[in-house]
Length: 356
Length: 138
Image (cartoon, rainbow over all chains, first blue to last red; front, side, top):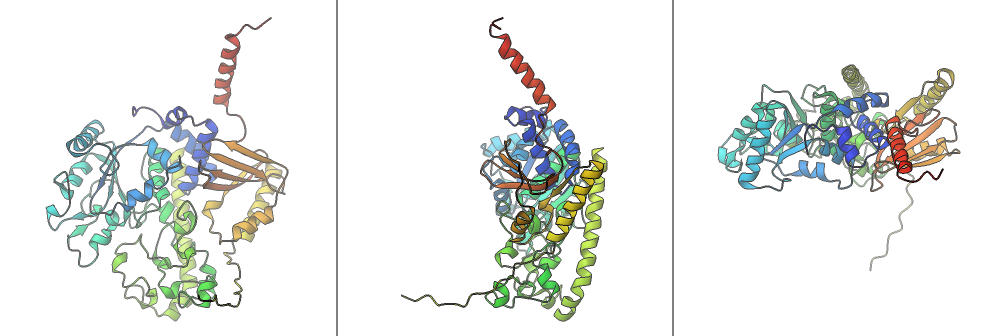
């Protein structure tokens, strides 16, 4: 299909009606955490959006991120957004293999030099070029080569964003995140192990709508999705405020759905959209299933000192005792959520300005 | 075979985010705004943390009204009027019946309903074509 086709034309060709397109825009606004009043502006922008070329490179990873994104088989919004981009290279998904696959990558790079989006999942080993290669090309070399002509880079998953599991102590391969290698391109981190599928596509939708990457937090994550901590948005938060904690996984507190802080929940220090977007087509998220948050969208979450250790007892999170933490939690928590809210509002304001 | 132990029933209070009541007030303000200034409002329910059970309580609070509409556009969309005239619940589903989005619209006619100008223009062409290909029969 030609890349000159606009998204609206593409959807019409697929038999999607105008109402269907408006529904798509309304869900996309919700995905990007933009207010519903933005829907007409999103519709106008998406109507004119051209299909960007996307090159997806997978390095030291488990394919969980690709698995997360391709999980839905129905014509979902995720799939439509994937339709809206021209995925020119993805060594797990593409039909071509060997030299044909590499040829496809080279052609896509040449035709779209300076304009394509580079998506990376997995970390890059610096210990030995032979630790991870694709078609005999070491990961570092391929990343540098493809990043050079990219308009922007999206690091999908905690491995690409912060090194992830390969980077965990003692880091046998010398794994580093994309940000250690690519310094001169707009870069957005979409961490999570795996990231929530709609967060991946939400970033792509933002790029399609506004022609640039969304506003980021200090760790390079889009504020629209990572602006609040899991704790800020957790439905169990009221139990935390009242000091009602589960002390084991089968006690009365656990059965009553009390706060999992003392069972090691990392919700207070983890920024992600799980508590509102949820998983498995909106079914639930780990805390709703009775297990604390592991903090998988934070740097070095594997080396945090124990998934079942409360934050107050961990070296990094334990600057205050549990009593102090639980007591101060209210004030700090509200302060943090207020700040996050301000950042989100700012991000929205910027997005609205862009759409004008 | 082990006999199943008879455990005493556990009283589980419904978890409460405290978001339900403010949400209903937001709807009240929006309805007043619609009535006085004619300004519609859409509230995205995905953006609000609601505990299991709270969504059901929201449904109960809003009740059922006179209108029920089903759209087939990119999967099913169900639009139902609540017991409060001008307050609609909109549920977007995909082809598998999975929920993609939920909103509350406070408006006279939900935004997805009116026929779209572009499609009406194409419909007119189609109708003209269909009539032109046949004998008008005087």
